[in-house]
Length: 192
Image (cartoon, rainbow, N blue to C red; front, side, top):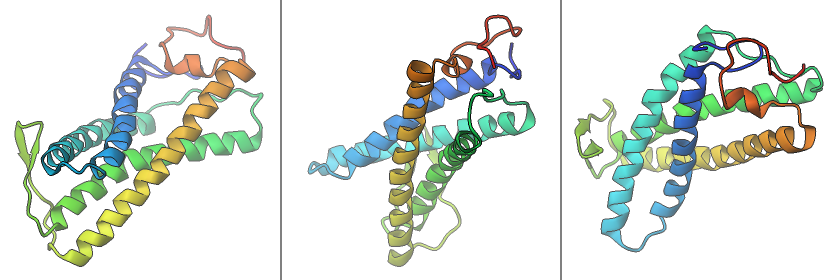
C-alpha cells in the first residue's frame, strides 16, 4: 500500500503528488501575479512567499523523484498508442525536471542578484545564497531563464491536466484513479 504496484500508485507517491501539485500550480500563478503588482511592499512579501514555497517544492520534489526512480511505476493502459506513451513519458520527465529546475534557477537568481536580499523562508529560517558572484548580467540571464521555465511549466501542467481529464472523462480508462487512492491488490483496478 505504501509502494507502487504495476496497476496503481502507492500512498507515498500519492501523498507527494497531491502536496506538490497544488503548490506547483500555485507557484506559477503567484509568480505571474507578483511581478505585476504596483504595490512594492506587497510584491516584496509575495516574492518572499514565492521563494519559501519554491524551497518547499524542491525539498519535496527530490524525495519524490528518488521514490519514482527507486521503485516501480504503474503500467500505462495497453489501449494507449506508442505516441501517447511517449508523450506521457516525456511530460512526466518534464514535470520532474521542472519541479527541481524551477526552484534551482530561482535559488541561483537570488544568489546572483545584486540587491543582496536575504531569503527568510516562511519567516523562520534564513536560506543561504549559493556561492555565486552577483552581477547584473547573471541576474538578467537567470531571471529570463526562470521566467521561461515558468511559462514552459504552465504549458506542461496544462497538457498534463488536459490529458488526465481526457483519460478520465473521454476514454474512461481509469488512468486518473491510479493517483487518487492506493490499492492493496489488483482488485478494482481498471482493466489494462
